[in-house]
Image (cartoon, rainbow, N blue to C red; front, side, top):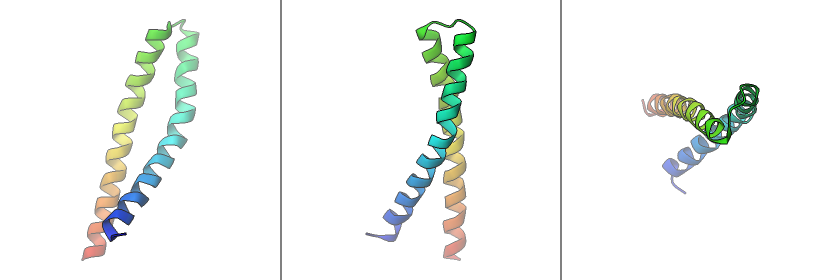
Length: 76
């Protein structure tokens, strides 16, 4: 396995693990709030999808930039 593939797999595992740790409880909280507000199934789906989408994009970009910086420092 090449060095780039190993790095990509490591980054994917870290990103997915962090994502799971953030999203599982957040998903519960979002659904709980939606139920308290008497949202219907469509409203819960839209709220959950929208909120989790933006958090996932932010998380992914942050982790990608972290690893990019880390790999650049190692090449110097």
